Amino acid sequence: MNDFIDRNKNSYIKISDVPDDVINKYNGIAPDELIFIWKNMGFGIYEDGFLQIINPNEYDFAFHYIDKMLEPSLIWGITALGDLLGWEGKENSKISSKEGDRCYRINIRECDRNIVDNMEGILNIFINNFDDDKYFISDSDYFGSQPYLDVKDKLPKLEYGQCYGYTPALPLGGKAKNENLEVVDTKSYINIIGQAVGKIYSKD
Image (cartoon, rainbow, N blue to C red; front, side):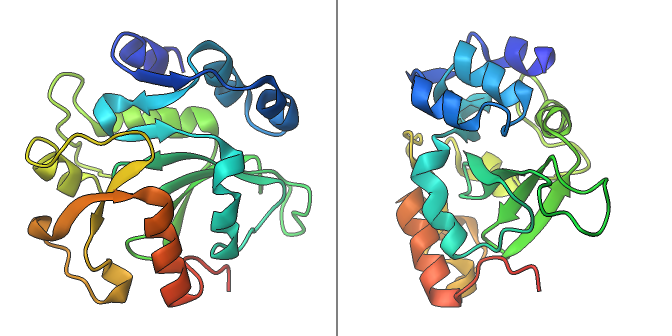
């Protein structure tokens, strides 16, 4: 986590402090690393624009389109390509005591989910996924971030709450071509995809 903070502390764009009611609501639920970032850095745009750390309360609607595997669940981040970063607890884990208390990525481009063991793990993926200076992806591009790197200097810079989305969205028959990417409102993009496909991710 220290590497993530050091990497971002002088370059991230702070949008707002995290309200006490949000911190109190998720204290003991969200991982300690996220609570620390909320308290010390706030909601904002991180990782050269690729990551936004957002208010989970504003993205609860996404669970209309995403099956919660374990409780409690929350969305804490979005990527520049509209993918959702979440955290799930282990209150109803019936398969293994090793399940839960972990981060995941909902890939809304492919309507799929990838699991990471813990918060420290996903922060380390940010460190390892990009070159510190030029943001070249590593050999293992966990976030599928190459399209972002291709267009970030050609399209308008993202504001908080925006992402680069394919038009039409891939689940709606769009093509994964850079020329089909444009700046979109992230919440609207999620809603359009979710309403069209029914479930962006289903555990079944």
